[in-house]
Image (cartoon, rainbow, N blue to C red):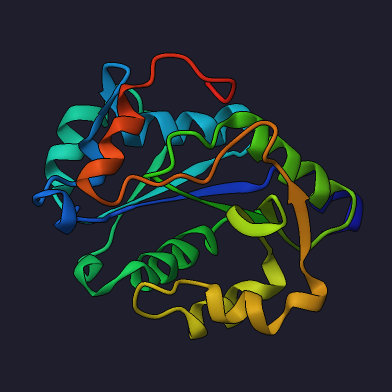
Length: 213
């Protein structure tokens, strides 16, 4: 494959949506309601509309329920991947997801989290623009702090999968490769607030925000 051909292939999206919502009373994050639809549908749409194709969605907790609720609607154009070890932490979902994406020709993958409803398509598009400009490691930045989404060029996937464990995901790998990482400021179009505890559920009630998809 030539460099020109590789550039023509879209970046794959990888949505980590396997969490069980332990601190949310055991309600799977993927199925939490936001504007009348599950969070997983909003997050997958942000990746698609931002320019990722295809979008892989890693499911874990209540995976059959997510498939039944969203498989023929908001996730119908996505590749659904099951992670039987989801309870061991986000690192397992990242490994499973990268293994699935590796069967494609995607030159890079952009990783998003299901529980960040204020991260939309505009943030995704900015990270993809950095990749088109040459970045092989890139991440959204919020007032200078690294956050999600995060992009990995294909040459990084094997090493990222090796270091991903527990709930740390790719944190250790990104820290070790900080000199290669391109930070893309996104605070003006997104916010990294995540839905992790009961008090965070207020984020799901917001009807209008500048970062709406």
